[in-house]
Image (cartoon, rainbow, N blue to C red):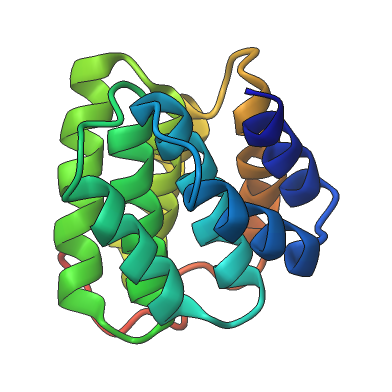
Length: 172
């Protein structure tokens, strides 16, 4: 459990190189599915911070294809996969993963999952669609879950940074 929490701390401190090193080592030895899910989520985020999106997608796929990491990690992994896909320009796949994550997050009562999935949809939206996604995201990103801290910090960036001007299409 300590290793999983240390991965979270390294992510929040934005130390992706240390996070990737620890996360890769931990995934080679940790077997408890919930901890595997938590470590993989942080590791995938670390890969994303270093521009290694394909590695992040691969680790998520591997974990989701294994023993169920359970709530909330299954849906959070799916939301992160969507974000890695959208930043890699794979718009349709990212929207599909984000919509699955939203459905799972709503079913499981996990606003962090829903918020990250909406963050992904926002990247692929434009115009009025982007404003609707942003509005929904602002309503979701509340609460005391410490895992929502970096998500809450990213919402103002999106709400003031030309929302919807870089998305490839509307109708998301």
